Image (cartoon, one colour):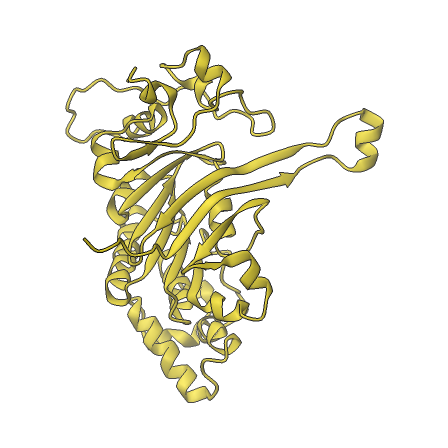
Length: 334
């Protein structure tokens, strides 16, 4: 039997801590200690070539921080990200940084904020091509931008317009065209459809799936919408307060969720078929990340929590082919 191919993206024990302390003088006068938020706390996963890993969770769980760490917008506090065997943090700071950036791009959440309103679409989509020195003469640049716009369902003539002349869905297509300009292998998509209407969401997601098939793209897809995740992903990771609590292939996660938090998220989805199964609404609020609970951070909201859950932090263990961080699952209580 041949060995499994090496993953394109490998993340090991990734952590990011932000210093959110008050200014020094305030701390001295009010006698307050420095404060830190552990936005990402020991996250590990791998993404195979041509596949999509989706990260889901409530707002503030660290999904977008992971996205920014993967493309080098943030430097990790600890742990590392390897892309095609190369350490990202070290390479981006060195002479091969530009070549690595060509291979990975990001699509941002808000299509209204991520496009420069003073630039024409031609300049927006052409920027990566000129920055990376891929195209020099103007005619080739125009034809290349035209091809990119057509590939995302827009017309080549749209390059002469400004962003304000487009709808939200069309602006997100321009963002995708810009991300594809350098012919990347890996795209980090940070909630690319959350600012769009549902009908437009489907169009943008279908374009992204078609582009993945055509170019063999690898995606990290960030979302809090499980219906979207079900449509685009191969593997799903569920995050809670900076940690991965469950990591499984899509079919397993939706048919047999293990972690109580995953079950709660799935139960919160409206049931079209009204199957009558018992449903547990998501209880309580996400704790304050400045003062997270002891032990398992989900235990104050968990119906299966016991004394061990309150005292001991669960590790992400492989149980029956699914990686899950839960004492109750490990002990066979659920």
